Image (cartoon, rainbow, N blue to C red; front, side, top):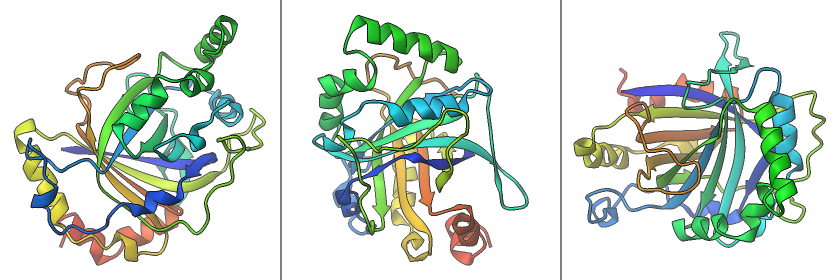
Length: 286
């Protein structure tokens, strides 16, 4: 079983390392890439955080991200970051912001960070750069951050961590300019930021005994995504259920253990891909 969610990638936070494109698009040698558990070896480590933003607070939430202090792009092992705003697809080809519900585990905003290795993420999470980005440099700064979050969010953020497998991407034509490790974006807190890309996510609920077969099926498919105009990147995410740390909640039956994430230049590029035979073949349609 699976569920589909769509997001807009925002202009305020797309930081790309030039090394991201080193991930492979080849599906050859599947057996050589299987670990001792019979699953595919991790290509990258992906950290996400899901936010339930209060009604009419979306612009303020985006401004907080745009103005935060972060050295992320300067850190060892960092590959990519973006912030996603959840949307509903309209029949006329447009997208409408989806405020979601508190009980929706996906959240209406999701942060998405790719690290080269899990150890790189762990080093950042336990270091000073993490404290700076989350208002923990002093007691006053921490309290101020907590109060501000309570006014904007419905409940605490919900982190989820994944092994990134079968990752592929095009080589970026440019690498985003950053200031001290973070993009400088003009956000006024009254208007939401324009979309930068379109992101399609599929959630899969795979019985543990079938995980190996599920991954092998995906690995054995011939991917033609890279041939389509507007394709940016793809990743299959396998939930790291053993992840520990502040805010991490044990996986429930309502949490998917696999999520596919495909980034397109825009909604039109995604629609164009869906309309051709390659999409139908990849999804078992005639």
